[in-house]
Length: 112
Length: 113
Image 1 (cartoon, one colour):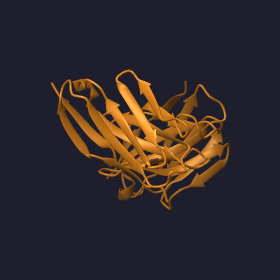
Image 2 (tube, one colour):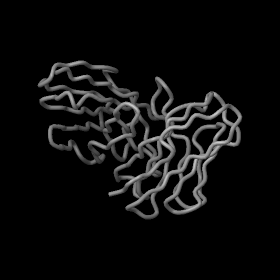
Image 3 (cartoon, helix red, strand yellow):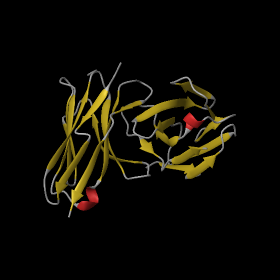
Image 4 (cartoon, rainbow over the protein chains, first blue to last red):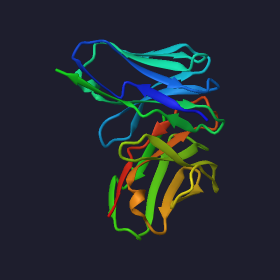
């Protein structure tokens, strides 16, 4: 059974810092891994999608890496801003129906 | 890209009342559709998924049901709500090809009182 874990559960940093969020999964047989952002009381916004054959994806100040063999992914946020404050969720797709297994999320606070 | 519409945004219902949450999708055809629930302090849990009209798979036994009367419409229902049905319900879509990105709606906050 696939399990996804995110560390840390919460993180508070001053504005401008670079930071790394971690995600690990138990079954390396995945199709893809997706990082989402969730603001309080809102739905999920897709940030980055990494296919199982890829090592990393970049979008602006965000960079996500994938090491499928070790069951790990990281989300790197450069030059953090207060607007980055949100909960970040990692999800893996390991079935042929597109079902996602989510981690518990990391709640990030960037202080001005 | 796909757009997912969910309504209502918030809902307060008494125990024992019926429920109907609707989700519609724009910008794609023949999507896979999903209902997830996010309970307070817990992660997202998949409730139902559908790969086509009238095809529903349930992931966990529960008090809820789902239906897909049209290609881009997904409905979550209950005949009698329980307190434990409270939570944040999210509809999502992906295509039949598993390597594609999943998109989510803005969610419905359900409080059963």
